[in-house]
Length: 160
Image (tube, rainbow, N blue to C red; front, side, top):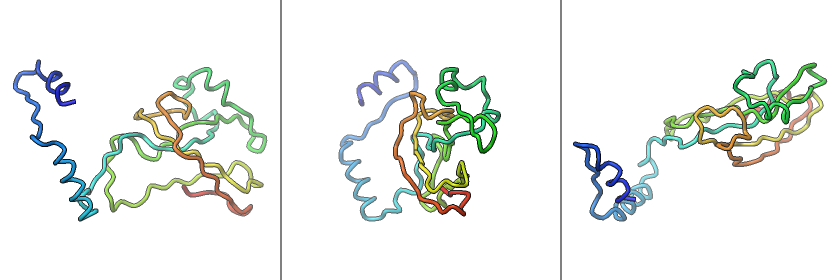
């Protein structure tokens, strides 16, 4: 890896790649510091965009940005709401590159159940290498978890 970095920056004048003499020791040092004081790491920059799969009313989507085959495979008519919905839309919680502090409050969003008789909700959590994923079926998106939560009939929303 060091050789590739040095080779890649070789053509740039005035830039040199500096590597520690004992890189393995640097990793051990960082691990030891973290083991002694878990607050050693103050901020984490997220490597991916994270979110959940949701269904959205078709009227809320920028249809010119949605792949044609996606729409035909994921569109359905919601009788209770009287309109067309599109499933597998990516609802972003936090974007790639965002700095998260260890003492930040958790990020939460509220979602409404699709019918008043619904007694459970499946929450599918995704990560994407894209900054602004539109769908959970894109090649850049991968499913991390599938969680099912039970709800009482008088509950209308779920906080995730």
